[in-house]
Image (tube, rainbow, N blue to C red):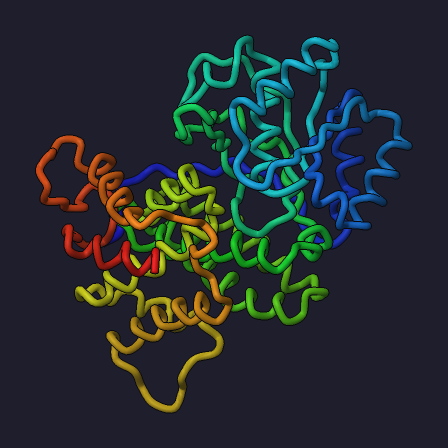
Length: 402
């Protein structure tokens, strides 16, 4: 049942559409920003002529003070952040009116960390978690190249500590981008594996945020529209990658999934994805997509059939006869499993050890049962729509890892 008493918050400023990246010049002029730092995803720059042309034109404006290339393939680390910030501080090249981040969620999060540390003394680890009493960060313009993380809307910035293998991030409302630009010409260059990993993660997020104990009537609206855009347009962009309308729909689907998350919560699949990411370098979106699918499947098997509400949002579905609520829910779940199998999305390449299932089970026990040290794991604190026990978890984890 959706919550009736709730707060809703959404701080956003978006420019959307083909060639919208060029609107950045007018925005900078209006704000009178004259010292600009650019954080650019290195792989994106190598593979996108569109971004290369933009950078060439930007340099001619003579307001670009510094370019930092983000080289990471996974979430950025506090250690990498410190190296970049120390270099900027030592060369006294740290006075910016504005930062612009172009790339995936990791590149944008990296830019958020830089924007915070250049206005606050100390290392990144000093601000891990949810720091308070911060100086305002440097204003940030976020231009995403993927359709998944929603970093262009969220105030979270994900960072991993290499020593402790924990992911706490630097999470502050100072991180809200002052502007987000959703230009489908940038995402149209994404490799297929990047599109799948990021987009499926967002798709699972849209379902996870809709069917959890902290969802509200308003957040559920964002979740529904996110699911509709992502589920129906993902196969289209995979077949017709030059269609900018499909890509724009994907961008807004990912955006709305984060809008839902910021005003509700996710379920236990997010915790599994976190563990897989920090311990085995599994891309967050891929881990979330696989984990979420099999949590949803188990929920359905145990009698939770509210996934039927998603049936009517799917464009290609059975229409010859009227389906029951159970059949509709089953169709949704089978469709998700089919996507994983059709695209051969597994964790085989992650080299997870044979006792990986035990490690995940132990992690979930510690995470969700801090006040209940017994071996009877009851996932009642995860916002999952129904209660799952230890047997359920073992079944789910085995499917995730198989």
